[in-house]
Image (cartoon, rainbow, N blue to C red; front, side, top):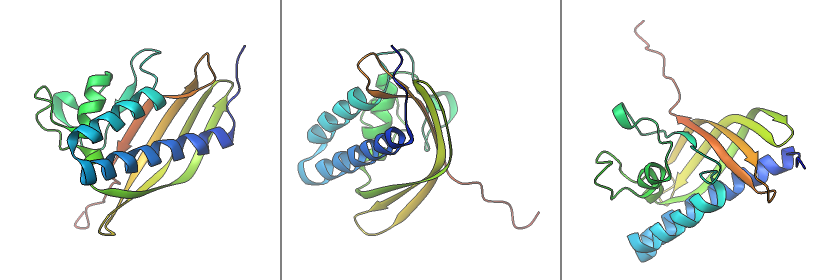
Length: 163
């Protein structure tokens, strides 16, 4: 039986993701890498659809041969770094984030699949803000859990003022 996704499901899924990122960051700042890694693993298992197949993940701060991260290992490395196979990762979830907010541009829902696009704003422990363009694709699994199956993030385009 197909379980239809609602706008409320999309909002809740974005909150779960943001809260998990803050939890990972706070754990890292207060307890170190091991605690952050435990929370990152729980977040990946709880929110992402690696149990359904490859996740189409393009992180904000990834480039070159490792721009795309369809594997769980690649996603974990992006969030907490410390993986020799991904030497350019700085650990996005280790940047002392304390608040994550999303602003919807649009969403598309069709049965148990949904897409969301908008902006996500991250605030760190010093009050510094980073805003990114983000797209998420979701699928409800057999248990009715929202799973991220597409995650694209990029810094906003800055037109060249000299052009």
